[in-house]
Length: 117
Image 1: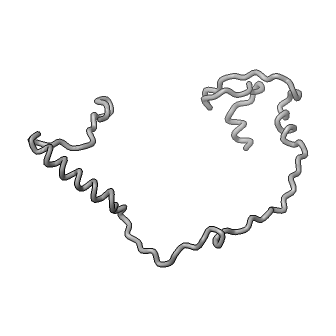
Image 2 (image 1 turned 60 degrees about the vertical axis):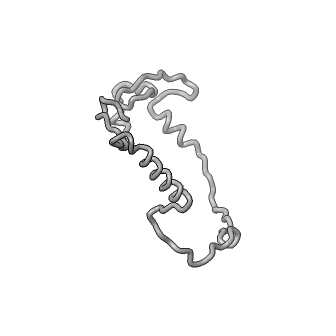
Image 3 (image 1 turned 30 degrees about the vertical axis):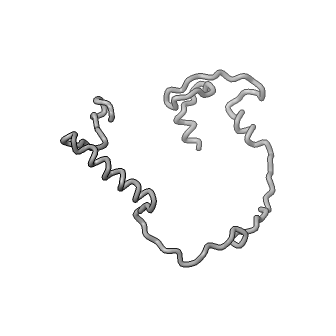
């Protein structure tokens, strides 16, 4: 059942007259047993060859030749609008985003920040 407010949809069926309920139950129970033992998933297939072992299909792991360079530019970009490292910044609610953010400097809007990206 769903609520009356959302349309009152009922998923299922009704048996009329009620005396046929036992007969319908027996039929459904029998079908359930048959399809539980040998289910039909809607796709028929046949296995043509046996799957190989996991070790035969595994690919050895390769190490990438990567050099990580950390020059601190991220912190410079973070403090581009002023302020010093360790300085506490005021946190305010931003209704446009629906979450809390650091208070923006005077004259800067959220839209301007998105345009930077």
